[in-house]
View 1 (cartoon, helix red, strand yellow):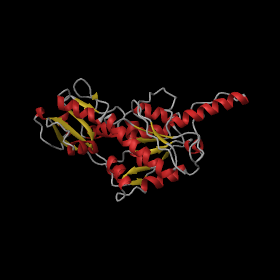
View 2 (cartoon, rainbow, N blue to C red):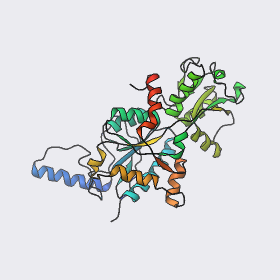
View 3 (tube, rainbow, N blue to C red):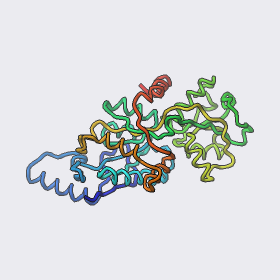
View 4 (tube, rainbow, N blue to C red):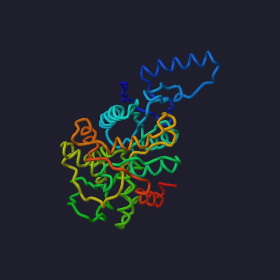
Amino acid sequence: MSTRRVARSGVLESQSLLPPLSRRTLLAGAGAALAAAVTGCGRSSPLSQAASGPTGSLAPLSIGAIPDQDPEVLQRLYGTVADSMAAALGLDVEYRPVTDYGAAVSLFRTGDLDLVWFGGLTGVQARLQTPGAEPIAQRDIDERFTSVFVVNAGTGLAPSDDLTALAPLRFTYGSETSTSGRLMPAYFLREAGVDPQGFPGGPGFSGSHDATLALVASGSYQAGVLNRQVWTSRSEEGAVDPAVVLYTETAPYHDYHWLLGPRSAERLGVDDLGDRLLDHFTGLAADDPADAEVLELFGAGAFVPTEASNYDQIEEIGRDLGLVS
């Protein structure tokens, strides 16, 4: 049986309930509407009107991710992931971009996104707001993830472990709910005796790791913080402006992971969906060209199982900083 693999483009607004539709979905939806008219059935939701997939599911598996990088980078990454998952699982899969971190959490809670690549903090927020949500897998690098503090060369600061030197600088985080771009850096700053909100004029929030690099490079902010993976990737690409200097790196912590919605298996008609997703991700092999592409795009050597307890520290710090309630 052939499988249609779906990767969507465009932006999903935080209040939107209408999923992107493929040609097959439109045809099936038209048929469903005709049948409803003939039988006098009540009007159903957009999700329930979606086409049946190759396993008899009601709709495609909708995947999403926090928008922590440039949208073009994310489109390539998750379009490839959607194709890989569709081929491996025998399901239609669609990537649905979101506008911001909060939208990813909100749309996961309402069931409009089935499987989302969250950071540690947004994963905790989404899981607490969505009882029954299941952590599936994380990358090998997420077991010991780090953030890097960067400064503009004009500050004259040389690399150092002394975070107190950043206190008098104009400083920007990434997104307000980013684990690696805000939560853990704020924690480490406070542990070093620096008020994480006390920078001159208050801290900025760039919205993404790439934006943080750009703002520090321009001098709009004298210092900032982003995750090590993005720093390494952009450095290898030659995309880091020479005006940006790596100042120091944090201690490691757990971070990104895939989170599966509690109603997805039933809606898709796949009782063992969580197990199948875990087998797929942990089975990605670097010696398989198709798998290697996915692993390379994620900056990972492999995916490994994960569990909710891995993010207990994130939840504790989030509550302490008022980012988790």
